Amino acid sequence: MSFGTLTNPFFSEAGEDVSNITLILSNVFGLITIGAGILLLAQLVMGGFQYASSGGDSKAVEAAQKKIVNAVIGLVIVVGAYFIVGIIERVLGIKILKGAVIPTP
Image 1: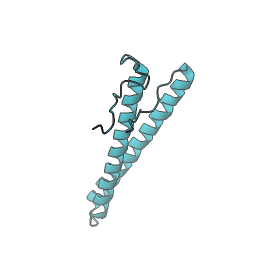
Image 2: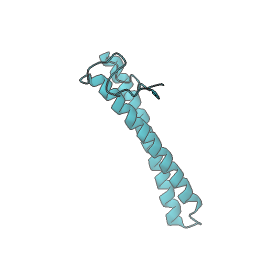
Image 3: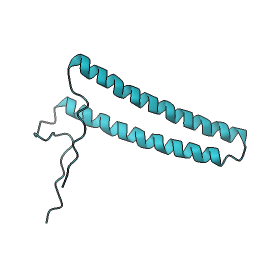
């Protein structure tokens, strides 16, 4: 009984060699972006909860606001990195952001 196949994220659909650096960079960059998005969401939720439960304490409100601002700054950095990689792709004529290959059953 087979439930589907798993593919190695470092190999393309055509079975390219693992030494293909652009494919590796694309997959690593995608994983980092997903991780950053998850961390952003967690920081925003924790900052919002901290802000809502501060009870008027000025130090707690300030800490919550700082957490939310830092999360937004992180988002700007990640989005900026995506744009910079896009510019590098166009200038050098290489494809870095190929997108992850998601195995389907």
